[in-house]
Image (cartoon, rainbow, N blue to C red; front, side):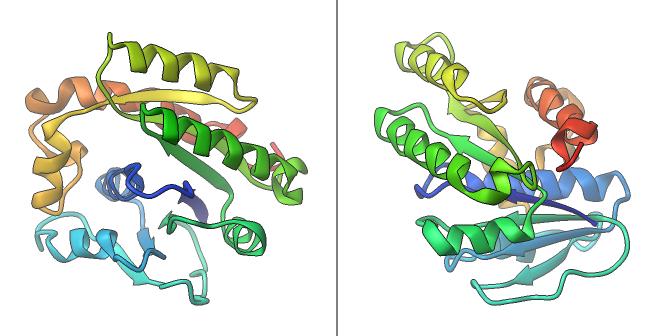
Amino acid sequence: MRRIMVLNPKGGCGKSTIATNLASYYAARGETTYLVDFDIQGSSMDWLDARPESAPAIQGVLADEGEFLIPHGGGVMVMDAPAGVHGKRLKQYLKRAQTLLIPVLPSPMDMRATARFVEELLLVGRVRRDKTRIAVIANRVRQQTRIYHSLERFLEQLSIPFLITLRDSQNYIRAAQQGQGIFELAPHEVQHDIEQWQPLLQWLEGRESLPGK
C-alpha cells in the first residue's frame, strides 16, 4: 500500500487541505483510499463527515497518535499528521510513511520553522538512508508579492524537491465545506488550481518519490 504523510511542525500551514485533496484525488481515480487523521483537532475527519454519500469512497481512520494496523493489499493511505512533532515522535511518524510532503506558508516565521524542521529531518536516519522521500509544497500563495518571491528563493535553497506552488484560492474552502476535493468540482471552475497540482501528482506517480528508488 502506498503511504503518504503530510507533516509540518507548525500548525495552520494547510496540512489537512493537502491531505484531503490528495485523498479525494486518489478516490476519484478508483483507488482504495484511506485517510488517517493523527491530529487531535480531527479536521480531516470533519471533512470526511461532510462528504456526500455519492462521492467516491474514502475510509477514515482517527488515529489520535495511537497505533493502528496498516491494511494489507493495494491502495493509497494519506496521513494528516499533527503539529509539534519532533525527536522520537518524529521518528515514529516517519516509520509509517514512504513519502513525506511538507506544506509551507509564505511568512518569515513559517520559513524559519520549516528550515529547522528540514534540518532535523535530514538528521533522522530513515530520511538519510532514503527510507522516506520528502518534498516541499508552497501553500496559500499570492504570486507576484514580495513575500512570495522570498519564499520561492528559500525553498529553492533547500536540499529537497520543491514541487508546486498552490495559490490562495476560495475553491479549496468551497470544496472543504462540501466534503470534497477540488478534483471533484466542476472542471471549468478549478482548472487553474488543478494545473498547479500536476507536478506533485506526476512526482508521486514516479519512482523518485518512493524509497529505495
